[in-house]
Length: 219
Image 1 (cartoon, rainbow, N blue to C red):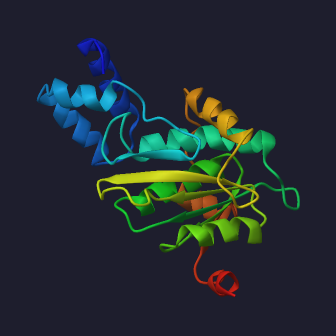
Image 2 (cartoon, one colour):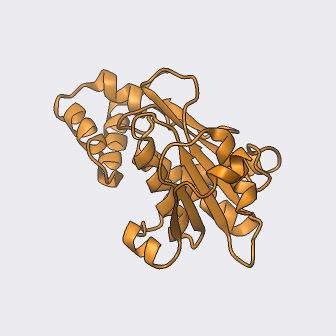
């Protein structure tokens, strides 16, 4: 971890609290600041959770080195910017598909990602209940989507969650998209205001998928 300035850690923690919209993640960090738990604060803020070639994976909790709504929003902000410039279009529109597993906060993280895409004008299809990763891959191709996301941490311990990115071919991102998306995510400073779920659905930018794709996938 190296030498870390406690004042810089506190600054990062306070900035996170100001930008995190969701409890209990914000309150989690506020309690650490109040108790002056610098050991835990340092571990949570000495670095940002890295967006790698496949996406994100980390322990769930408040902090920039954790999986939480703010980190999901920031990652999706960078991804959405990249898709707007480089994504394949179907009938003139950009599309995203999002699935999730049964891990803690998977539903919440999936919705956050969907609303970020919607805020960028990307029509988003969100599975209403958990689905296996292969069905997400199929659905990206079936719906002719520009990008897909599945909220999962695969085989990791239960305190983890993650976020995997798929391109329009239904495969996880590879060169040249992988490094370009990482650079885009790392460059995010300000987040676009988040569209509400109601507004996204009214504008046909968020559609819930129930069972209509299951039969096609199984066939």
